[in-house]
Length: 206
Image (tube, rainbow, N blue to C red):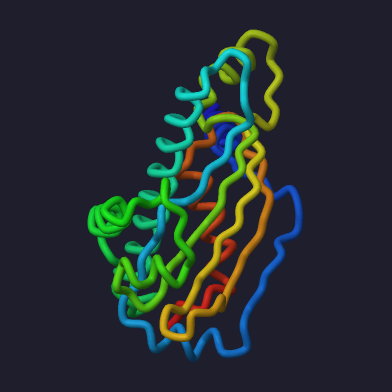
């Protein structure tokens, strides 16, 4: 019974690989990343398909909420790696990053990566895009699974994460991937699965 419960919990929290990742790695990525003293994680751009049952303003709010969730999870993941001695770069606090961007009118006012670098005053920025098939909440899917006994992928997420060197104003790394989240998937589990795979090639490594 104990083994069954462990298997069930693993199944519910699993994030499954659904396609091969596409990785861009600039030849000088490692050298440029090593020179960066402080980096910032920009709020991800999140897109969720329109739904007739959800008003436009409510959908925008969902996207803003998911963006902050993903940003916080990415920040926490990177901070843990830094504390483990995996890399030496400082990470700008999210409150500081978001306050500076808001003051500059972002995201309502579009900014280039070079402009974002200037606004944040950092050496490197991590930007990302999350295209969700639905919001990350999966309460309804859990209820259906309990009723009919069928568990499937509740979320498909297309993710693109990039690192731009502010001094050279160039893209040095990009990671594109598609994930399917099973029942029990959350933004925390998704980011953990994403960053674990992406970190194998990320230029921030001691």
